Length: 435
Image 1 (cartoon, rainbow, N blue to C red):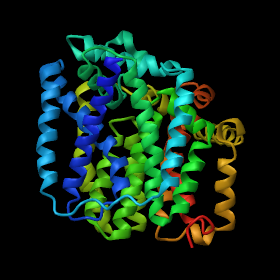
Image 2 (image 1 turned 30 degrees about the vertical axis):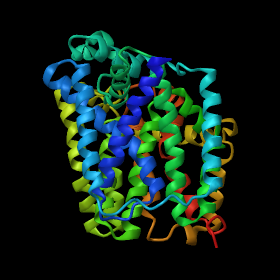
Image 3 (image 1 turned 60 degrees about the vertical axis):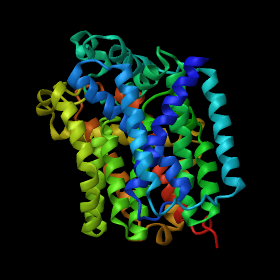
């Protein structure tokens, strides 16, 4: 119980660091209080992972005392800077219904997670938790890249394992509560983030968006599974809603925050690197260049951090092997693309997983296309399109068995951009927005 409480405190410390850092950076910008509240945990946890990684890189192990001292020092410094900011975040005015829906989401998620409090699926243990244990216990953290551990995908980034290690360090020992709390917090913050961002278009948009998300069995199930797909979906969504803030308010600082979250996503999962490219491409096509440049400026440091990690490990990606790609013919690639589409068509019809989410999006896209697909927001669905086109390309070129890979990963890739689509459609549909 004590270890679980301390693990929770570690994440609260990270959240406080993230809140102060965002507020100090956005000191002269309009900052809705609820939006800042739900952006803070992601930013803070990335900062925690950043601190621990460089402790690993330079000292080859993580010192508990140094890690805690670094966090507390940073928190004190940022708090001092926050106290000196002239403009306070806007008061939260979302109303009782907003927090009632968020509470319902928390209870529903808790009920799902208590059925399997240690997570579901092999990847949770064979990839993320085993890396965290090696980092926490091993004298040399590079042991996670040993040939005998190829099954754990050594090319995968370390945000998730380091977030677990941070809680264990604060608690003084390993505790299963860390992964439980991390999954619960990231999923609930993702729901809150979508609702807080949608609230700018009216309370009804916020309510419907939140209820829609938590009514999808696959979304709540993935949140409770402790996989890394909900955290990466959180960073994708944070990047999108921050850029929407930038464009609506003509504020380049929010564009830099958007770029920061997009860059951070690359250290959560490899898909984040593809998202950053898709995001840049859609912005280049349909927004002013100054916002694209501000986004790139905000994201390049974090992107460089992920590239630095990749170069320091030299671990090949298990999906793409140059020698296998060179043997593929055009006919084989087209055949594989057909297989991808057939699996996708089957997936969106799974009402036990997705309820009727995808048909709802389809109906909105057809009957309200003029209202929804306006030029001012077309960059959002385009980002999702480019991202998923990239996924399809990887599937077509993979050296692994394609049907097997689609069966085990397609639904997880789809959940990564699902909150973004929820935000897009349910803030654009005219009958959802407040009159």
